[in-house]
Length: 402
Ligand code: ADP
Image 1 (tube, protein in one colour):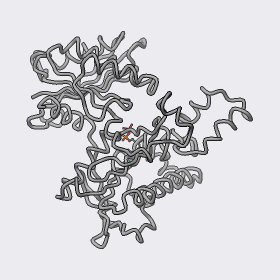
Image 2: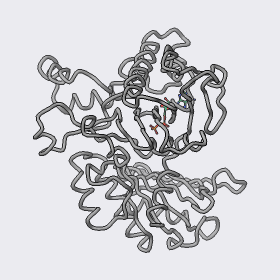
Image 3: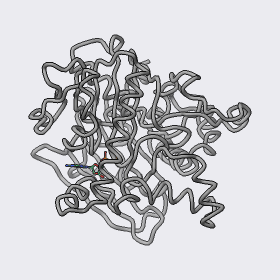
C-alpha cells in the first residue's frame, strides 16, 4: 500500500511517498517558487538506501498542477522511478491547517469536506487556500486514489470549553468563531503515541506534556491520549516564544503600537509574526546561530535563549496544574530534539515537581526516542523525533482501512 503525503503551501508543495506495509519512504521532495520566474523541484528517490538518487530540475513552474505533474514524472520515470504509474498510489494524505470546529478526525475528502475547508479560509487565509489547491491537483493527477484530509487542528478539538474560550464577548465566538483551536496537532498526537510506546504503557493511562520546539513552537497537555490544552490559540501566534513569532503578549500592545507608533494592522501583524520571537530579541532565529553568538559574548542572544526557555518552564508549570499528575514530558522538533541547553534550561529548578534530568543522557541522547530523565525522576523526560509525514500517512491508512 503506497501513500502519498502532500503538504501544499502558497508557493510550494512538500511531498513524500511511503510504502505503508513496511513504513518505508520511497521518495520525498519539495517543489518551490511556484509561479516565480524560476521554480525548482528536488526529489530524493529511495532515500537512505544504496540506490538513493537525487533529482533536481529548475524551470518555470506556473502553478501547483505543473509542479505536481513534474513530481509525478520523476516518481514514475521508467529508468529509475519508484512506481510505474500513478494508479499505484492507494491514497493521498493532505495536511490541512485549519479544520475549525468541523473536523475532529482525519476525513475522506468529498464535496462537503471541500466546502467546509473553504468555509474555514477566513480562519487561515494563507494556508487553507493553498491546501485546497493541493487537493484539487491530486484529485486530477491521481483520480483513483482515496483523498484524505489530516487537520492540524483536529487533535485539539477535545480541548474543553473552559480552556478554549477567550474572555471576550460571547458573540465573537458565535459570530466570528474566535476561540482557541491549537495547531501542530499531528505532531503532538504522534509524539504522545510514540512516547507511550517507548514507555511500554497504554496511552490512555498516561498524562503527557508534549513540547514541539521548531521554527514554530507549541506545548500541549495530553491526558489519556486527548489534548486538553495547547499554547497555540486562535492563530499560531499565541503561547511560547518562537523563531520569529512573539507568542504571548499583553493584547493592549496592539492598541499602543497603533496609537503611539503610527502602525497599521498589517504592519503590526507582520511585526508579531515575522519580526518578533528569538529574531526580534537578538536578530537571529536559528538556535544554532544563537549558541554561536552566545559563545562570542552576545548578550542579546543570551537574553533570547533565557526568554524562550523561561516561557517554556512557565507553561510546563501551567500544564502540570492542568494535568494534576504528569507521567512524561516529551521534547520534539528541531530545537527540542537537538538542543540539550534548551531542554536543561526549560526544566531547571523543577525538581520539586519530580522532574530530574540526567545530564549525561540529556547531552548525548543518540538518535530515535531516548529517555533523558534521571532514575530518581518521578516524571519521565523523553526526546521523541517527530515525523509529520509518517503520522499523516498512518492516519490516512487508518481512514482508508475504515
Ligand atoms: P519547522 O518548525 O520549520 O519544521 P524544525 O522542526 O526543522 O522547524 O526546527 C528548525 C529549528 O530547529 C531551526 O531553526 C533551529 O533553530 C533548530 N535546530 C535544528 N538543528 C539544531 C541543532 N543541532 N541544535 C540546536 N537547534 C537546532
